[in-house]
Image (cartoon, rainbow, N blue to C red; front, side, top):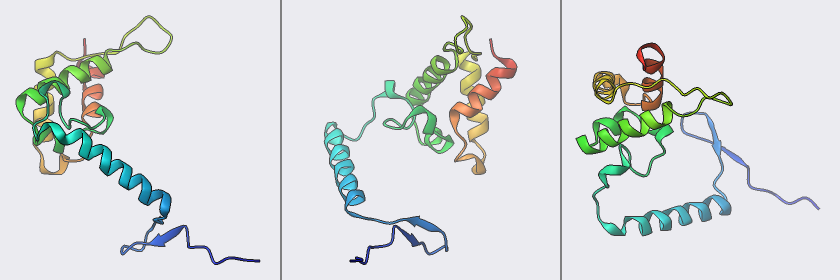
Length: 135
């Protein structure tokens, strides 16, 4: 007996294939919404020590997040970037190159100022600059 299964993919308006929306996707969306609602009970302000795009993984934070953030959040992000980039390198006793925090802040300010830079990932800007001028 053959059952008529719903297609796993659907065409979007742009002609590209996108994943179908089944019960599992719906359940995941509901759970994510509940988790988001529960985490937002403390008010609208993001703690400054969480950095740019609070609630966003550092690897996903981009220039749009940077531009939408307060100075305290930006400073916290620079600290997070320094800790990430300056971590251990593989199995060697070496550590990654880092920038002075003031240099890093100015670097991100300059790079994120351009209108086309909204999607630029902050960590990529940081580690590439640190590779050339880092300490």
